[in-house]
Image 1 (spheres, rainbow, N blue to C red):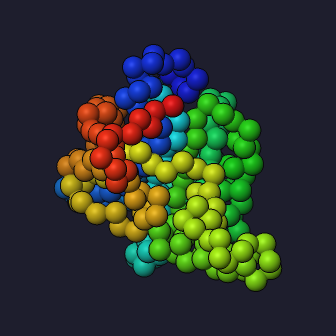
Image 2 (image 1 turned 90 degrees about the vertical axis):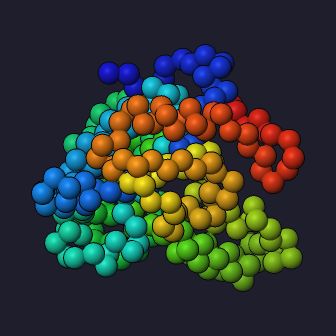
Image 3 (image 1 turned 90 degrees about the horizontal axis):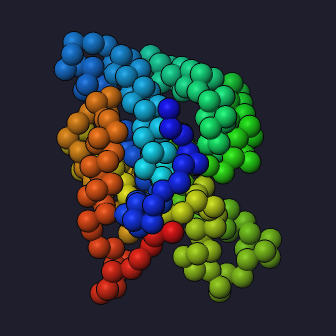
Length: 252
């Protein structure tokens, strides 16, 4: 098994996105198409996530962000929410040691207020255990919504202004970005969504302003390293202008 830390050629670094974000969509439809309960699709989706973390390592991707549980997912049937939370617990308990041994740093974004004590404890443990790792970064968006994140950031910014820590007249985009959950995380270069849907679904609304998008028809449980390689290849063929005329080189 190849994990982060391998050396990559200059040409590989030039064509590889530093940060890939994935909307892991289609678990339920994958299960339905096979006559299986939705939980079977979510279980298969967890296995696809495991394989994708390894594949991202092979491509030299430094940051991988996955949309694990949105702030809107609480509206799903209680049994499905319970299943999803159970799978999160299993993933962290089963894979955390291996991720840590492989030098993967885990970062969690999203609102943790009001979360059950056991869930919050697992998220805190994952971050604390891996905090000094530098080989690769796995960002888990849990209880996350892009609009909610911006609202929470605005509230913190207002509090900082009231406390005299920030000059209101000097506020710009960078100032607000420093109060987002992703303050220390580079914006995604590439956003991938599976299942054929073509929307962000409240994912990284601020951060994806200049991201490249690749929409794939496969359901998330069927996502393979070949699909990741294809998305990276599509990304590498594009020119990123960031609102300008000439392409900008954003490679490391």
